[in-house]
Every structure is written in structure tokens, then in C-alpha cells.
Image 1 (cartoon, one colour):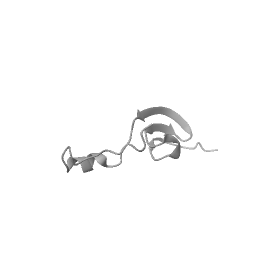
Image 2 (cartoon, helix red, strand yellow):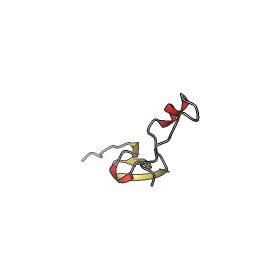
Image 3 (cartoon, helix red, strand yellow):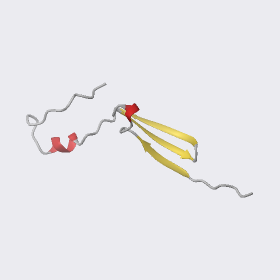
Image 4 (cartoon, helix red, strand yellow):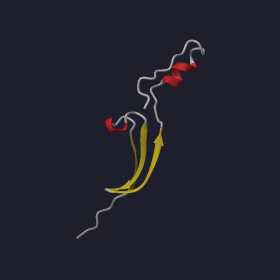
Length: 69
């Protein structure tokens, strides 16, 4: 019987997952089905607004507040 070989993977989960509501991201280190480490990135909300804001002045940019938890 041979041994199954696996290697550690780093997976980025979120913020697109419906359960995370766009403000939570997990960076998971896993080996097969075993999770070895999880780092949370709370407050992660990126919709490209930073790039839009770079091209206009302070008066020309209005942030969206529709998904604030």
C-alpha cells in the first residue's frame, strides 16, 4: 500500500464568499484537508475605489457606504 503524498497550499478565501459580507478574508495554509494556519484580514473591502480616487481630486470623489457593517 503506497502513501499518499500531499503538499502544503496557501489558499485565499474571501472576501467574495457570501458568508463574509465583503469585509473578511482568510489566508489558509492547508495540507490536504488539514488546516495548519489561518490568518484573518478583517476590514478587507476593496472595490477598486482606491484607483478611482487616485485620478480625481478630494472634491471629485465620494466613497460608497452601502456595505458598511
